[in-house]
Image 1 (tube, rainbow, N blue to C red):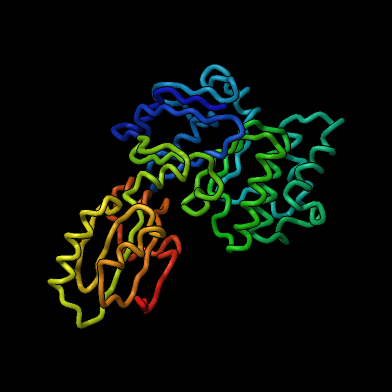
Image 2: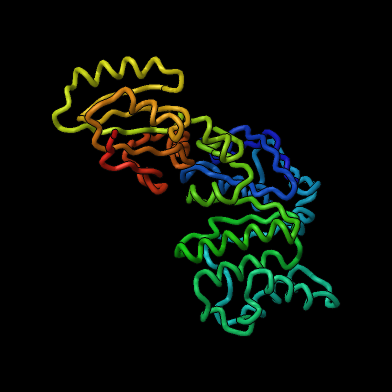
Length: 328
Protein backbone atom coordinates (compact mmCIF):
# COMPACT_ATOMS: atom_id res chain seq x y z
CA UNK A 1 0.00 0.00 0.00
CA UNK A 2 2.93 2.34 0.76
CA UNK A 3 6.44 2.05 -0.63
CA UNK A 4 9.12 4.52 0.48
CA UNK A 5 12.38 4.53 -1.46
CA UNK A 6 15.56 6.28 -0.29
CA UNK A 7 13.73 9.32 1.08
CA UNK A 8 15.92 12.09 2.45
CA UNK A 9 14.74 15.44 3.74
CA UNK A 10 17.10 18.21 4.73
CA UNK A 11 16.55 21.69 6.12
CA UNK A 12 19.83 23.52 5.62
CA UNK A 13 22.37 21.62 7.70
CA UNK A 14 19.70 19.56 9.44
CA UNK A 15 18.88 16.11 8.08
CA UNK A 16 15.35 15.24 9.20
CA UNK A 17 15.18 11.97 7.18
CA UNK A 18 18.28 10.10 6.08
CA UNK A 19 17.89 7.77 3.07
CA UNK A 20 14.84 6.04 4.53
CA UNK A 21 13.25 3.04 2.76
CA UNK A 22 10.16 1.22 4.01
CA UNK A 23 7.14 -0.77 2.81
CA UNK A 24 3.70 -0.90 4.46
CA UNK A 25 1.22 -3.65 3.54
CA UNK A 26 -2.46 -3.35 2.75
CA UNK A 27 -4.82 -3.45 5.78
CA UNK A 28 -1.90 -3.16 8.16
CA UNK A 29 -1.83 -1.09 11.34
CA UNK A 30 1.69 0.27 11.12
CA UNK A 31 3.22 2.17 14.03
CA UNK A 32 5.77 4.96 13.66
CA UNK A 33 7.55 5.38 17.00
CA UNK A 34 10.48 7.44 18.11
CA UNK A 35 11.52 10.35 20.33
CA UNK A 36 10.48 13.92 19.59
CA UNK A 37 12.42 15.20 16.59
CA UNK A 38 13.09 11.71 15.24
CA UNK A 39 11.53 12.45 11.84
CA UNK A 40 8.08 10.86 12.19
CA UNK A 41 6.10 14.02 11.42
CA UNK A 42 8.35 14.88 8.49
CA UNK A 43 7.75 11.44 7.01
CA UNK A 44 3.96 11.75 7.37
CA UNK A 45 4.03 15.22 5.80
CA UNK A 46 5.92 13.79 2.83
CA UNK A 47 3.52 10.85 2.43
CA UNK A 48 0.56 13.26 2.64
CA UNK A 49 2.20 15.46 -0.07
CA UNK A 50 2.40 18.44 2.30
CA UNK A 51 6.15 18.72 1.69
CA UNK A 52 8.48 17.25 -0.90
CA UNK A 53 11.50 15.08 -0.11
CA UNK A 54 14.96 16.43 -0.89
CA UNK A 55 15.63 13.14 -2.66
CA UNK A 56 13.95 9.78 -3.09
CA UNK A 57 10.23 9.18 -3.55
CA UNK A 58 7.22 7.28 -2.19
CA UNK A 59 4.25 5.51 -3.71
CA UNK A 60 0.90 5.58 -1.87
CA UNK A 61 -1.93 3.37 -3.14
CA UNK A 62 -0.14 3.04 -6.48
CA UNK A 63 0.40 6.80 -6.92
CA UNK A 64 3.76 8.54 -6.81
CA UNK A 65 3.76 11.44 -4.35
CA UNK A 66 5.82 13.55 -6.77
CA UNK A 67 4.03 12.74 -10.03
CA UNK A 68 0.41 12.29 -8.79
CA UNK A 69 -0.02 14.29 -5.55
CA UNK A 70 -3.75 14.91 -6.17
CA UNK A 71 -4.42 11.18 -6.54
CA UNK A 72 -2.46 10.54 -3.35
CA UNK A 73 -4.53 13.12 -1.45
CA UNK A 74 -7.79 11.61 -2.66
CA UNK A 75 -6.77 8.21 -1.30
CA UNK A 76 -5.64 9.27 2.20
CA UNK A 77 -7.29 10.56 5.37
CA UNK A 78 -5.54 12.42 8.17
CA UNK A 79 -6.55 12.77 11.81
CA UNK A 80 -4.41 15.50 13.32
CA UNK A 81 -3.08 15.50 16.85
CA UNK A 82 -4.64 18.90 17.59
CA UNK A 83 -8.47 19.13 17.50
CA UNK A 84 -9.64 20.47 14.13
CA UNK A 85 -13.43 20.13 14.19
CA UNK A 86 -15.63 23.23 14.25
CA UNK A 87 -17.12 23.61 17.75
CA UNK A 88 -20.17 25.52 16.53
CA UNK A 89 -21.20 22.97 13.93
CA UNK A 90 -22.85 19.68 14.82
CA UNK A 91 -21.07 16.38 14.36
CA UNK A 92 -23.15 15.70 11.24
CA UNK A 93 -22.37 19.15 9.80
CA UNK A 94 -18.62 18.72 10.36
CA UNK A 95 -18.61 15.50 8.40
CA UNK A 96 -20.85 16.90 5.65
CA UNK A 97 -18.48 19.85 5.09
CA UNK A 98 -15.64 17.38 4.68
CA UNK A 99 -17.72 15.27 2.29
CA UNK A 100 -18.47 18.34 0.17
CA UNK A 101 -14.80 19.34 0.07
CA UNK A 102 -13.94 15.89 -1.25
CA UNK A 103 -16.68 16.06 -3.85
CA UNK A 104 -18.58 13.00 -2.69
CA UNK A 105 -21.54 12.55 -5.06
CA UNK A 106 -24.90 13.63 -3.66
CA UNK A 107 -26.52 10.26 -4.39
CA UNK A 108 -24.44 8.44 -1.79
CA UNK A 109 -23.21 11.30 0.44
CA UNK A 110 -25.90 10.93 3.14
CA UNK A 111 -25.54 7.16 3.23
CA UNK A 112 -21.78 7.45 3.70
CA UNK A 113 -22.12 10.06 6.45
CA UNK A 114 -24.53 7.74 8.28
CA UNK A 115 -22.09 4.83 7.87
CA UNK A 116 -19.12 6.61 9.43
CA UNK A 117 -21.21 8.08 12.25
CA UNK A 118 -22.43 4.59 13.08
CA UNK A 119 -18.91 3.18 12.79
CA UNK A 120 -17.61 5.47 15.55
CA UNK A 121 -20.77 5.29 17.69
CA UNK A 122 -21.93 8.89 17.28
CA UNK A 123 -25.26 8.45 15.48
CA UNK A 124 -27.28 9.40 18.57
CA UNK A 125 -25.21 12.58 19.06
CA UNK A 126 -24.84 13.64 15.43
CA UNK A 127 -27.11 16.71 15.84
CA UNK A 128 -25.30 18.04 18.93
CA UNK A 129 -22.79 20.87 18.60
CA UNK A 130 -19.23 19.60 18.87
CA UNK A 131 -18.55 21.92 21.80
CA UNK A 132 -20.83 19.60 23.81
CA UNK A 133 -18.72 16.54 22.96
CA UNK A 134 -16.24 14.92 25.33
CA UNK A 135 -12.58 14.57 24.31
CA UNK A 136 -13.08 10.97 23.25
CA UNK A 137 -16.15 11.86 21.18
CA UNK A 138 -14.23 14.61 19.39
CA UNK A 139 -11.48 12.18 18.44
CA UNK A 140 -14.04 9.70 17.14
CA UNK A 141 -15.75 12.43 15.14
CA UNK A 142 -12.45 13.39 13.53
CA UNK A 143 -11.80 9.76 12.61
CA UNK A 144 -15.28 9.60 11.03
CA UNK A 145 -14.57 12.81 9.13
CA UNK A 146 -11.25 11.42 7.89
CA UNK A 147 -13.00 8.26 6.64
CA UNK A 148 -16.02 9.76 4.89
CA UNK A 149 -14.37 9.79 1.44
CA UNK A 150 -13.29 6.12 1.79
CA UNK A 151 -9.51 6.58 1.92
CA UNK A 152 -7.22 3.59 1.45
CA UNK A 153 -4.72 4.97 3.98
CA UNK A 154 -5.54 6.73 7.25
CA UNK A 155 -2.90 8.65 9.22
CA UNK A 156 -3.64 8.79 12.95
CA UNK A 157 -1.36 11.22 14.80
CA UNK A 158 -1.47 10.30 18.51
CA UNK A 159 -5.21 9.52 18.40
CA UNK A 160 -5.59 8.96 22.14
CA UNK A 161 -3.51 11.88 23.43
CA UNK A 162 -5.15 13.38 26.50
CA UNK A 163 -7.87 10.73 26.80
CA UNK A 164 -8.65 8.97 30.07
CA UNK A 165 -7.93 5.20 30.24
CA UNK A 166 -11.54 4.22 29.55
CA UNK A 167 -11.81 6.49 26.50
CA UNK A 168 -8.43 5.26 25.28
CA UNK A 169 -9.57 1.65 25.49
CA UNK A 170 -12.73 2.52 23.56
CA UNK A 171 -10.66 4.27 20.91
CA UNK A 172 -8.52 1.13 20.48
CA UNK A 173 -11.69 -0.84 19.79
CA UNK A 174 -12.78 1.66 17.14
CA UNK A 175 -9.36 1.56 15.46
CA UNK A 176 -9.44 -2.24 15.25
CA UNK A 177 -12.96 -1.98 13.84
CA UNK A 178 -11.75 0.40 11.11
CA UNK A 179 -9.34 -2.13 9.68
CA UNK A 180 -11.93 -4.88 9.68
CA UNK A 181 -14.87 -2.91 8.25
CA UNK A 182 -13.28 -0.13 6.19
CA UNK A 183 -10.48 -2.08 4.47
CA UNK A 184 -8.06 0.69 5.39
CA UNK A 185 -4.32 0.77 6.10
CA UNK A 186 -3.51 2.78 9.23
CA UNK A 187 -0.29 4.65 9.94
CA UNK A 188 -0.24 5.36 13.67
CA UNK A 189 2.06 7.61 15.68
CA UNK A 190 1.95 7.39 19.46
CA UNK A 191 4.09 7.84 22.54
CA UNK A 192 2.05 5.23 24.43
CA UNK A 193 4.04 2.01 24.06
CA UNK A 194 1.15 -0.09 25.36
CA UNK A 195 -1.03 1.37 22.62
CA UNK A 196 1.47 0.42 19.92
CA UNK A 197 1.80 -3.06 21.40
CA UNK A 198 -1.97 -3.56 21.40
CA UNK A 199 -2.82 -2.11 18.01
CA UNK A 200 0.09 -2.44 15.60
CA UNK A 201 0.80 -5.36 13.30
CA UNK A 202 4.29 -3.95 12.83
CA UNK A 203 6.26 -1.12 14.37
CA UNK A 204 9.01 1.05 12.94
CA UNK A 205 11.33 2.82 15.36
CA UNK A 206 12.86 6.00 13.92
CA UNK A 207 15.65 8.01 15.51
CA UNK A 208 17.65 10.85 13.99
CA UNK A 209 15.88 10.33 10.68
CA UNK A 210 16.92 6.69 10.37
CA UNK A 211 15.11 3.41 10.93
CA UNK A 212 16.52 1.58 13.93
CA UNK A 213 14.13 -1.40 14.01
CA UNK A 214 11.10 -2.74 12.12
CA UNK A 215 9.07 -5.82 13.08
CA UNK A 216 6.01 -7.04 14.94
CA UNK A 217 5.77 -5.99 18.61
CA UNK A 218 6.37 -9.58 19.76
CA UNK A 219 9.49 -10.05 17.66
CA UNK A 220 10.86 -6.65 18.62
CA UNK A 221 10.56 -7.54 22.30
CA UNK A 222 12.35 -10.82 21.62
CA UNK A 223 15.41 -8.83 20.51
CA UNK A 224 15.87 -7.64 24.08
CA UNK A 225 17.99 -9.72 26.41
CA UNK A 226 15.18 -11.55 28.20
CA UNK A 227 13.10 -11.41 31.37
CA UNK A 228 14.55 -9.58 34.37
CA UNK A 229 14.35 -11.21 37.80
CA UNK A 230 15.21 -9.30 40.98
CA UNK A 231 15.77 -11.16 44.22
CA UNK A 232 16.21 -9.58 47.65
CA UNK A 233 17.69 -11.54 50.53
CA UNK A 234 17.20 -11.46 54.29
CA UNK A 235 19.36 -8.84 55.98
CA UNK A 236 21.63 -11.44 57.56
CA UNK A 237 22.60 -13.11 54.26
CA UNK A 238 26.26 -13.88 53.70
CA UNK A 239 27.35 -11.80 50.69
CA UNK A 240 30.26 -14.05 49.80
CA UNK A 241 27.82 -16.96 49.60
CA UNK A 242 25.59 -14.99 47.23
CA UNK A 243 28.55 -14.10 45.04
CA UNK A 244 29.55 -17.75 44.79
CA UNK A 245 25.99 -18.63 43.79
CA UNK A 246 26.14 -16.03 41.02
CA UNK A 247 29.04 -17.93 39.48
CA UNK A 248 26.96 -21.12 39.48
CA UNK A 249 23.88 -19.37 38.08
CA UNK A 250 25.92 -17.79 35.28
CA UNK A 251 26.71 -21.26 33.97
CA UNK A 252 23.02 -22.11 33.39
CA UNK A 253 22.11 -22.03 29.71
CA UNK A 254 18.98 -19.88 30.24
CA UNK A 255 20.83 -17.15 32.20
CA UNK A 256 22.18 -14.17 30.23
CA UNK A 257 23.79 -12.28 33.09
CA UNK A 258 23.65 -11.86 36.87
CA UNK A 259 24.80 -9.12 39.22
CA UNK A 260 24.58 -8.36 42.95
CA UNK A 261 24.31 -4.92 44.52
CA UNK A 262 22.84 -3.53 47.76
CA UNK A 263 21.35 -6.90 48.74
CA UNK A 264 19.57 -7.29 45.37
CA UNK A 265 20.44 -10.06 42.94
CA UNK A 266 19.45 -9.08 39.37
CA UNK A 267 19.33 -11.87 36.77
CA UNK A 268 18.38 -11.69 33.09
CA UNK A 269 16.98 -14.99 31.84
CA UNK A 270 14.92 -16.68 29.17
CA UNK A 271 11.39 -17.61 30.26
CA UNK A 272 11.29 -16.44 33.87
CA UNK A 273 7.97 -18.23 34.50
CA UNK A 274 9.59 -21.58 33.84
CA UNK A 275 13.01 -20.95 35.34
CA UNK A 276 12.33 -19.13 38.63
CA UNK A 277 12.02 -22.45 40.56
CA UNK A 278 15.37 -23.61 39.15
CA UNK A 279 17.05 -20.39 40.25
CA UNK A 280 15.53 -20.59 43.73
CA UNK A 281 16.93 -24.09 44.16
CA UNK A 282 20.40 -22.47 44.25
CA UNK A 283 19.53 -19.80 46.83
CA UNK A 284 18.76 -19.51 50.55
CA UNK A 285 17.43 -16.68 52.73
CA UNK A 286 15.29 -15.23 49.93
CA UNK A 287 12.96 -12.47 51.13
CA UNK A 288 11.41 -11.06 47.93
CA UNK A 289 11.25 -11.95 44.26
CA UNK A 290 9.89 -9.94 41.35
CA UNK A 291 10.23 -10.15 37.61
CA UNK A 292 9.17 -8.39 34.44
CA UNK A 293 9.11 -9.30 30.81
CA UNK A 294 10.69 -6.93 28.27
CA UNK A 295 8.36 -4.22 27.00
CA UNK A 296 8.27 -1.89 24.03
CA UNK A 297 9.07 0.86 26.50
CA UNK A 298 12.40 -0.85 27.20
CA UNK A 299 13.10 -1.05 23.48
CA UNK A 300 12.06 2.57 22.97
CA UNK A 301 14.57 3.71 25.58
CA UNK A 302 17.23 1.52 23.99
CA UNK A 303 16.78 2.75 20.42
CA UNK A 304 16.35 6.35 21.59
CA UNK A 305 19.78 6.14 23.16
CA UNK A 306 18.67 6.45 26.78
CA UNK A 307 19.85 4.13 29.54
CA UNK A 308 17.36 1.61 30.80
CA UNK A 309 16.42 1.94 34.45
CA UNK A 310 15.85 -1.24 36.40
CA UNK A 311 13.28 0.58 38.50
CA UNK A 312 11.31 1.93 35.52
CA UNK A 313 7.60 1.37 35.99
CA UNK A 314 6.31 3.07 32.83
CA UNK A 315 4.67 -0.07 31.48
CA UNK A 316 3.04 -1.20 34.67
CA UNK A 317 6.24 -2.23 36.43
CA UNK A 318 7.02 -5.78 37.34
CA UNK A 319 4.28 -7.99 35.93
CA UNK A 320 4.39 -10.70 38.54
CA UNK A 321 5.44 -10.40 42.16
CA UNK A 322 6.25 -13.05 44.74
CA UNK A 323 6.39 -11.47 48.18
CA UNK A 324 7.85 -13.04 51.32
CA UNK A 325 8.80 -16.19 49.47
CA UNK A 326 8.57 -19.25 51.70
CA UNK A 327 10.80 -21.97 50.27
CA UNK A 328 8.93 -24.63 52.17
